Image (tube, rainbow, N blue to C red; front, top):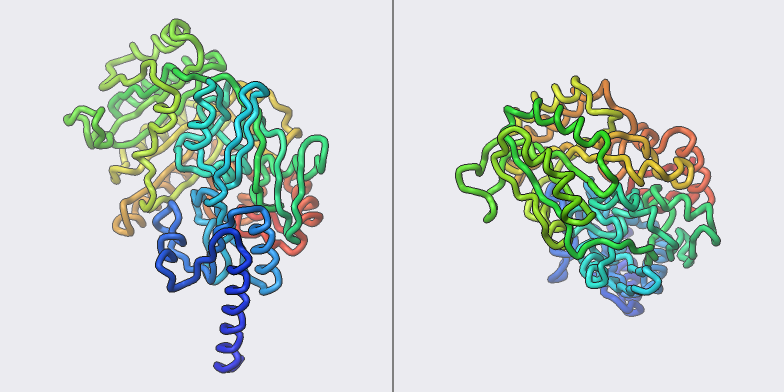
Length: 469
């Protein structure tokens, strides 16, 4: 194409974009506008991409119009809910970002115990709307995560062992398909599509509204972290393994390895020290929680015990200071069947090698209600996993990031003999084989067939992509 033809095409596309912007209820943000740089940024600071247009949708009609425009003009499509995708799938170079962040409506029906949530809502906003009624949906551990991305991959959180994954609370979705048409899916309507969106990610459409079942939670829970020195990791993990083996569904735990962060609740002499931490959340009465937690709280010589009654909303935001917008994040992940002596050995060895003050490992306890949902009932794979690793190699900026990324890869590789399944929401851009592993062969084939039916041209490919071919 000649320089003149390229210029004419650019002008024509700009005019077409301006016409699109005039029809929107929301906003069109183009390169050069005052808010462009702010709007193109996502949570993971290591992602730096420049789309040709950002459509900040205010309605389903805006979503449909933006999607049709992208199809007609052959633009790559990125869909942004909370912008929290680990590998940065919610922004692209040269294409169109369909941004749902203006669509933040929440409707709670406390009598029916349901909530309807638009596609741009964040987890903290959902919790804030439901907790006045003592109700909640399983909803992650960082409040500025988007509901949409969390849900579409499965949805893990503090109440999942009692009530199941986020998708296990999902009653229906409203979405816009690849051809720009609105569709509703539930167990009674487009049931095949409803099966696929419960774990299959953003492969089948743009979800504009979710309807969830609500569960009784809070407003207070018995929750928080207990810290031990990293040199005691082997003993703590062996105790922990036995302690959680027959624990009640009301208890959920995440084991964390990191250096102690500089926070107001932390004694100054502990800041920067390598520690292993068990963070717990018990949903039952305080007396029951104290009885269940007593063995953990009295094991060995804890450096610090912050596990106590507190508002559920406070506990939900506990990890927020450790994962703010703009830091550079890299993740590796795997599921394991059990916390064997060999796995404990890897954790003890690799934990001592943490350098960055913001690098961490989270070992999520699985089981409970998650494992009692039939494996074939949803697209989510790995309900029988014992634990899920989320290995974070993080830095404040580009400085030191390569070293942290290599440490995370080394940790993951050391665990490789013990890998089983993998949680799709914790994947980076790791290729088709890893996506297939996230679903298993049978589910992956079923998802490919569903993709051929609803998105045969792979319009929605900026995700953990299930290719239709």
